[in-house]
Image 1 (tube, rainbow, N blue to C red):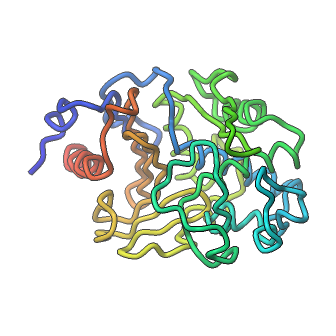
Image 2 (cartoon, helix red, strand yellow):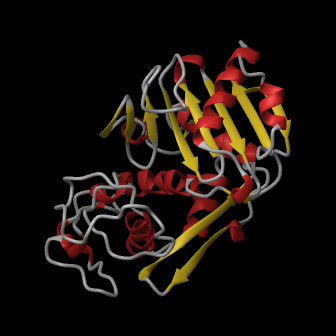
Amino acid sequence: MDDLETLLAAGGSTALLAVRGREVVYARGFHAHRSSVASVRKSLIGILYGIAVAAGEIDLDATLGDLGIDDLAPLTPQEKQATVADLLKSRSGIYHPCVYGMEPGRPARGSHAPGTFWYYNNWDFNALGTIYRQQTGRTLAGAFQEYVAGPLQMQDFAVEDVFDVPGPQSRHPVYKMRLSGRDLARVGVLFLEGGRWEGRQVVPETWVAQSTRPLTDLGGGRGYGYLWWTAEANAPGDDLSTDWPVFYASGAGGQYVIVIEALGLVVVHRAADVDKGIGHAQMGRILRALLRTIA
């Protein structure tokens, strides 16, 4: 049986934090250090979408054609039928080259109609950044400061920690984010508590519920909602599964925000050097060892 301290000492992990009932029940590493959250950024921008949708600023049923969204190699009439909801579910059917588009096995353009096929697609996520800026008139950095970091009383966040990186592949830049482990834990607690923070409804409860349920069944007990991953209890298809259902945000190299509602538990793992971090299977071993440690 894996020993937690041995797993963490093996390398890659720079912080592990567990919060239950607003109390820290385990802490190891550098929780105030701000570093790249990698693809956890996608779940974080989902918070901004939930707020903007509730405010009537963004329509989930609006198509890219409705919004005037295009790209360097023009989108086809079929591709322009993809909706905002399709992008949030990573089901746009648009396989145009994209910034940070290193995904393996990208389908051929036109091979799947919008809404019919799930593929973890950075084009979708980058275009969501463009749509948010266009429809709200706000930058992602300013919006995150106003609607997330401020209300959640983040301790380490700086507005320059959210920034765009353009590239020659596409009109839509990738948005990057840096956060500390303890600030990410606040996001986990926010979602554990149905979008509330100290009595204030920061993001609609219905949005939290929708985002963190398996809108797409990926097989083996694994699913994908609106920019969040899900795993059933003891899911054979997800190395992160436990004896209880989980939902989580995941980024390359070992960036995780994991929520186990049945235990009232939030777990954050950081690897400051993404290239020397840990993989998904190793995170599963760390998570299960942590659960034994704090039981």
